[in-house]
Image: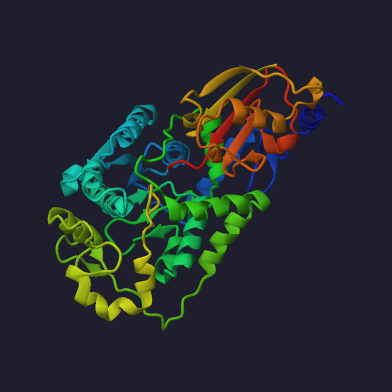
Length: 355
Length: 101
């Protein structure tokens, strides 16, 4: 009777090597595996995803979007391991964005600076202050805690591209994991955002643009990333952004986690559903052009970042939030119909989860 | 019994920003040491260690989905989750996966 559950565990062995005690139940397969086999299958699966999807070419310069959080820390570690082990021939860099959030980003950047040393990867930090003339602290002081995540999300997306251009890299990789992607599929369905829904499950995006982005963790469960970081004692930072209410995405996230508890495969199933969506060819999609002001990709006359920035600089911070008005206003009238509902509830984008 | 409880992934913020807590847990009245399970430990932790936002840690009588639990460095999903028997000197780790990327 004594400690029966523990004894039951002790008598079972890893179902891969049949030698060692299991330490983890894989959400993907429900297999019970030991620490050594876990490292092996975790790394090997990511390697297979990289190879099968031809994510990289030998000799490429690749930037890893590094926030100091668990996903990007594990990505930096695993990618530099695999690069060595399988001779990818990649030049890897860490790229971090300093949004200018005291007590949050300054601390997480310290983590990235340690990663620079630990993994021997050169680090580039680009700041909102340098790129836009505003820190998030200053923006929040001006606009308050409503919509601040919209500014941060729009600015970060562009900042990563600008940082990648400064590093002269051919590709940018981000730590988005399977849970994040499943969450985004659901959000895009709820928002009726057809354009994003068709893009969000792609492992590589922006191939037509200057710097394609890819997600080597597309099929990697968050649970395994966190377990990997824990067992390997990787140094990561885990504090919620001090400005982030994260409400809308939070609901989707919680729902995904509830589903995972009942049926862990649900996460991969949702990704599959997202991949298999077919959008009728008659659906009017926003056309990608370039921003007249800064040259960044945009489906409007001005890109979102320029509209938001103009609002800030003119003391009209509501510009570009919610229903479009102002610079892009007239242009919007023609193209508004399909996406207008989605646009007006587009309060999203917190953390680094922009797709 | 003596236990080491560790909080990570942001959960430490709910308990005075201390990651590691060496604690002495008294068995519930009438219970013998074989009956002390994770279920009991969770309610003890919630009462004695969690200082704010308990909903970030628990949902119903178990941990909130997205919180990983390891008993002596082993995934509690392998040992029966809430039914896992806890013994003297055990190390229990709670890690949230819900914070930042």
